[in-house]
Amino acid sequence: MANPEVHHLFHHPIADHSFSADRQTLAVARDNNVELYQRSGKGFVLQDELRGHDKQVTGVDIAPTSGKIVTCSQDRNAYVWEPSSNGTWKPTLVLLRINRAATSVRWSPSETKFAVGSGARLIAICYFESENDWWVSKHLKKPIRSTITSIAWHPNSVLLAGGSTDGHARVWSSFVKGVDERPEASVWGERLPFNTVCGEYLNSTAGWVHGCAFSPSGDALAFCAHDSSITVVYPSTPEQPPKAVISISTQLLPFVDLLWSSESEIIAAGYDCEAYRFSVNPSSIYLTGSLEKAKAGRPSLADGREDSAFNMFKQMDLKGKGAKDDTVLKTVHQNTVNTVRVYEETGGEVARLSTSGVDGRVVVWTL
Amino acid sequence: MAQINWRTINIDALDPDSSTNFDLSSLTPHIEAISTSEIQQVGGQIRQLLRGGNAEGALQAALENVPYGGDADGKAQHATVVSECLNSIRATEMSPLLSRLYSSQNGSELCDTLMKYLYKGMAQGAVSKPAAGGNSHGARNVSGAGGFTQAGGRNFGSSEAGGGMSVFLSWMEKLVEMVGPGSIVRVMSDRRTV
Image (cartoon, rainbow over all chains, first blue to last red):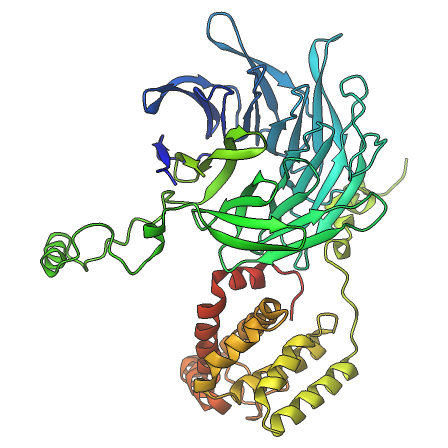
């Protein structure tokens, strides 16, 4: 496993991050603004700042093909930023019609719509109406009973999964006539009008769902909840109960975000400040290891420096305390990891992924 | 014009979308109601196992038959049965017993339930009142009596059968070694309370 590429951008929490399609631009949500970094050499330099939101920006997403950036914030607004000819970014306000903060935003794979989760107990599906030249939103309300914390699109751009603080992860159809083509029949159902609930899942403890993700083929849904568990649902047909619902309660702290790196592997990261791999199939799920290098995982070994008595007393003399420097975590991230996203993908398998966290670092991992 | 003071109208009760009209029972998975007599029955069986010397079996039975659907009284009774089991197991037997429990089927859920009872037991000790229906040291009331509260509390804690708080703490130490912080998080986030 190659070394991870660490970019310590600043000393503030990063709520969300997104790379452009060519991976040369990185958009990072920082307080009320979104900062755009351009790759130069091995690192990233600040190139531009998107100002427009009045409150903290909670979600950023860059559309791979069109290059448009969508941002959502706690000020109940979302903006779509388009690059203009002279290099600046022009924002277009999207009327979400929500009366609480927006919590997350993602472009659909087809890039004709995006979904915004909010604390107003609904998800706003926004699409562009060309007659009026503006973005219109339609709401997915039933049966959400609390804040939506995370959303994930199915590859067919019609099905949407949402995790909520009412302990449920649900799958809806967000089919918009005129914008979407009729999707093929899948295990989640066929002939799905807008706001059809294709599935509603909760685990036995009903803890808040922090993150959810569809498998690369779209035939399975995984979600991670605050009770330190990951649950994977394999549906069979729309009317029947699912083929399999497997869940693992881990010994670790809860996960905040997860993604499928292949049809049989999930990578999740959260309050333990590191990313873990899980091997999953319809009959079982188990933890296979961490993305961190092995040496960092063994707490008994000293941290690379000389482990001699001389050094120990030198450190005691220098710093006035014991030999171990315990202010720095052994993991690459020094604080909670908030977002895990795909960086490089080949044929349905993820080769590299990027994580960002509360410590202001964006790290690109190689699997 | 109506003579009602419109400022006193509770608009939230009339608004179907508001949070006061939120049916909270829809949030949890379905829990069956258990009557107090059933809980007492189970408690009696567990005490029999304890008297017969099978503390491990008693603990396992107590953790498997958790009365999530019972009322506060029933839950408190079951909690005292569990703490009796915990008190009767020796310190040296704790770790092997826990590893057997964890590796059994449904093990991690049983350990989570044990963690919930540990926290509940510690909460009762901290309030410094005689535990509901439990450790029979009479109704010694130590609350608020001037400067004696702290001294009384300390006495009470150490004179309970088996040492009270220290039992829970030593169990907690052994359990966390096995199941890690994930179990503690599950206790905090689980909507089913013991």
